[in-house]
Length: 299
Image (tube, helix red, strand yellow):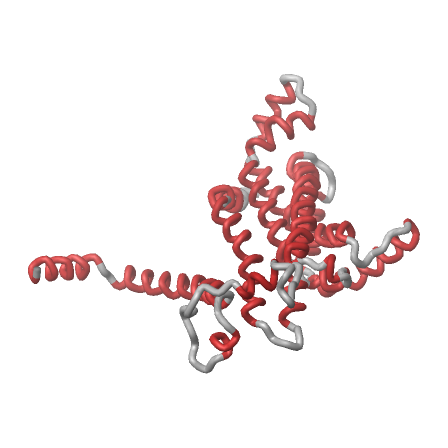
């Protein structure tokens, strides 16, 4: 046993070098800083208020309590929060935002990448420049513009998920255009020219040739825009007043600011909001890696 132990330790001593030791220590630090907050959020959703508010931290709850989740989803609970409605509202906003952003970004980025017109590079840089402005600077003029249009056409700006989707497009379209433009530039132009010679129209080339080659970039842009709409807080806070129209971030903020603090319920709602994004990211990891790296090589 001692011989085996010494041989193992000797093997580890031969394998560990200073660069490997520093790299391993760095990886452990980053993994701990990323995974521990997620674990703390999930575990806190099963704790009692006393366990969360106690002076001594409770790393493992004493029991698997579902009281916080019952408050979110059980209509018979005295503090029922109707969180299922907020989940549906978030999906109603996030999915159309991702779909519309990808469709518009495909057409716009393809025109910038393939067609020749004056000021195309200035246009691309100006699109990215708009994205650099913080959302708080754009929300007031955007709200005023939509309010005037709503008065003329006849629709309500507040408590309107369609209007909220439009405001999300103002945030997601610039970066989607920039990402897809760089990716389309990596696709050889000769392939599209061959399709045009064979009799395809420009739209047929986009549908049959370009889009199948750009699937990793399309998935990356879709996931990215979906995540922005899923987690967005500021615009939803301004445009939504009806509790039945709240998205999940606004509902979590409402529970957090309740006069009777219930941190375990906040953690449960945050867990429900976070897990789908984590699963989506992990399932699309291969496409995300290809889409983000390929678009950064050329262009």
